[in-house]
Image (cartoon, rainbow, N blue to C red; front, top):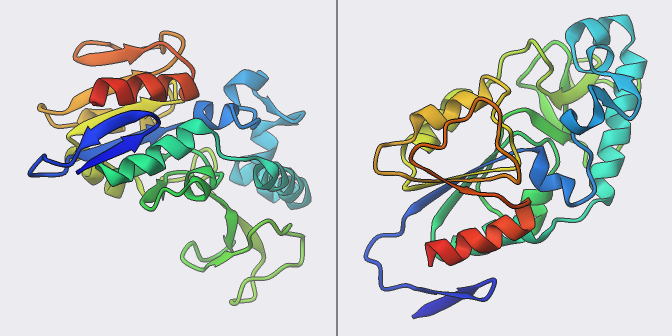
Length: 242
């Protein structure tokens, strides 16, 4: 039996399905119209990142922080998955695909990916300011000052702010550690601790990075570098995997 993914035909004769792990960043969503922090000179929609993505910023002006994330949530809700998102979803017919994303949008899920781990949180969720485990789905709704969690405390965006722990990092490392194929796409790999995940890839792992430039502080030894934007790079990746 054979399956076509974006015009390429894969055979199902392989006795064992390989684990394909995707580490995605803002660049994959940029082609869906969502701006990236690094492309904005340290500003998102005119906001200083220290004022809207730190606990200090929250304490100083929670209304400003909520307004910023309400805007981002609205933008993400209006965006559509692109060919790169859909390609990784389609590859589930051939590989065991797990996506680890630094993005807080839900474009991977909307494209059809079924195994997505969000390192830095999700715009479509909120949580209690006093209980990190008290998380609720809010979809595209705005959060306002006075909106409370079930414990009676103010809701905050379910986002990992600068200076906060990345709670899913250990689980992500375990996923990378069992990869047969690792694909890094849309991330410059300069933000830690997420960038450290590539160090957990096993020796036998095929490693690809899709990036139109040469990422800073990155060694391409043992990696195949596809110098394209996400949508074109995924097409080349699929041809190489075939």
